[in-house]
Image (cartoon, rainbow, N blue to C red):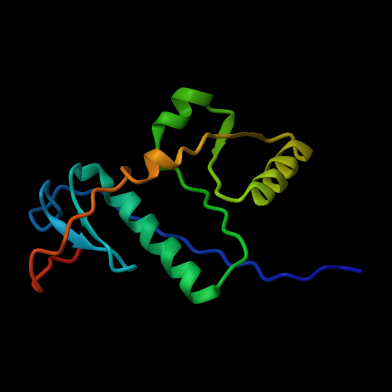
Length: 137
């Protein structure tokens, strides 16, 4: 018996361009989920786009699992080198299946730790200052 499943690929891309209309430290933007996010570092465009596309995929397709193949952080390269992918997951079964598939194909993948205490602090959330909240371009 063959198991059928639907695969959806979504590409989210952003370009970090120095323009006057870009976000600046102190700006507050609203995510697709509705959270407000204060821009602390202008190198966050890709992470904000990734957050929105993950929310979109979750809401639109109601998946049982999501695999994100993002290249957002050089810190993983520093930690694991160029031959290993860092695997972050909140689902042990999905992570295990992903790592097993990587091993079967001789691909480097390493499960990274996920500390719940760090999750609260990973995004600065602030209340919306007014109804005139700037939206990220």
